[in-house]
Image 1 (tube, helix red, strand yellow):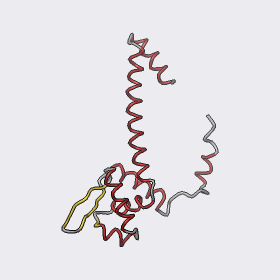
Image 2 (cartoon, rainbow, N blue to C red; image 1 turned 120 degrees about the vertical axis):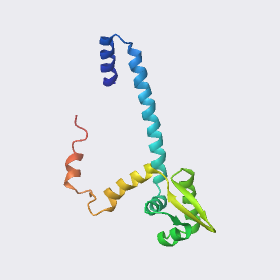
Image 3 (cartoon, rainbow, N blue to C red; image 1 turned 135 degrees about the horizontal axis):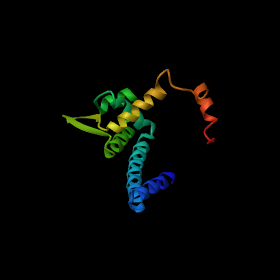
Image 4 (cartoon, helix red, strand yellow; image 1 turned 90 degrees about the vertical axis):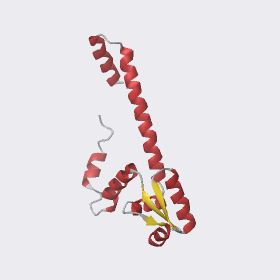
Length: 144
C-alpha cells in the first residue's frame, strides 16, 4: 500500500491521474497472481516423492519406462500413474521407439527448481537445522 501512495503522490506532482497509477499497480498485481498460480501448480506437482525422484532422474537425460522402473524401484502401476501426472502437467515429454516409450524432462521451470533443491538438500553443503546461519537469522524474522 505504501508503494501505491508514493506512486499517487508522484503522479499528482506530474499532473497525471492517480487512478492510472492504481491501474498500473492492478496490472502488476494480476501478473503477480498469474505467476503465483503457475508456481503453485508446479510446486503441487513436485510435492510427491515419486514424481520428484522421477524428475531428478529425467533431469539427467532420456529414459525408457523399463529403465526407470528398474533404476528407481518404483513399481509399474505407480510409475505409470506418476508419469501420467507429469505428462499432463507438461513437465515431461515422450518419444516412442518400437514398443518402448522414452521420457525426458520438458520444463525449464521444473529443472530450475530441481537444481535449487539438489543444491540445497542433496549435496554435502546442505544446511542443517542446527546451522549457525539458520539459527542466527530465524530469531529476527518478526522484528521490523
